[in-house]
Length: 175
Image 1 (tube, rainbow, N blue to C red):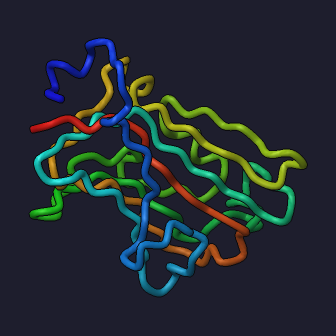
Image 2 (cartoon, helix red, strand yellow):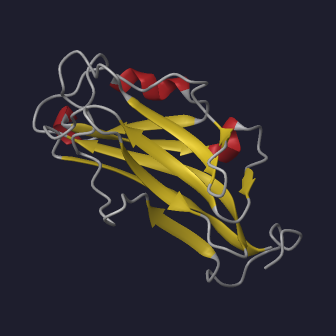
């Protein structure tokens, strides 16, 4: 499908993309210890394709009640935090930083990103975050070129969380 055909009515779902961000070992579980060495979770746009990003989700599950000032239920939040970015895989150049150099250290920090919706889990033991890229960018969405990498960098110890994952949703189109 070409970029021009993207907005035409669809009759199939062959180009829809739903993917977990994964580390180099192919795990999607971001409840890891990145306090000594940063651990990056990525989705890379395939070669010869472009990716219309619709949304990115985050799911944090913990054994204790989560509060706005914590990260999951990690009391007081994180010291270094997590970073979100989009990079050029060839030169490693940063193309987009939705947090303008800041880090997410507390649950409430997800609210920094425009177009975010939060849904708490039963018993307030976690929550899901949906970052709607189309809403946050005035209804335009984002077209990422081939080999572009969406990254979540973990820079703290998150091993006390039950689970922490992130997914991207969108449409792959031919170059």
